[in-house]
Image (cartoon, rainbow, N blue to C red; front, side, top):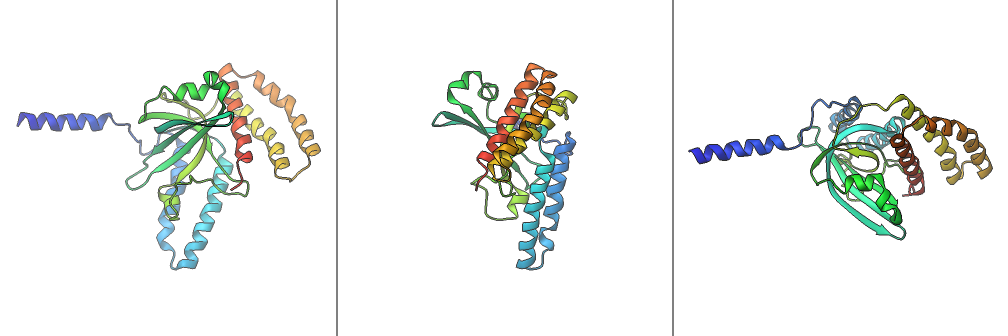
Length: 262
């Protein structure tokens, strides 16, 4: 009987040591996103025929893109990191890993994270040096944004199921990570960093529009040069670590449209 008791006790201890998924979430931004998915999932089975279901899923993808585009940056979300690896291609090394969390039974959200690095810069890369020391299965807190296409869609991982309901219940998103660590941080950025983040989005926008052929290079340069002094001033108010954050964000935003064609 003692052996059975200690076996049961050991199992309970092992279970309690597993990373906890807080329900409700401690981060209101992460909770709001889950509410968005939960509300849409509750409507799936209200569709009465294939035409209604097709319209519903098309509208969901539009609403999801608009949500992601408006939210922009996810800050201090929590999940479990796994599948940490690197992949070399030409002069670039891709740091890859997944972060996932379970809002409730039969649901799972997975972010397929990619951070692109010039291979000769690996020894000095912040995210690479942070993630390479993490064990798979570690609870982490992370910032970043869901990757989107240049034609207004969310980028799902290539291994995502073709069942459209799974895009709501168990989505697998491509994701650009900006910050990650095992320690919980504030759910919002400092005032100075938040200001610099907003200007970073502004200054990347003319580059994106020129790449897509929406404006000329002259127009893009003019808008960029107008914002550059304001951006420089905002960055001068940041710490060294915050400037690194802004640099990673700018690079990720640029890669988002450079690799945004389906």
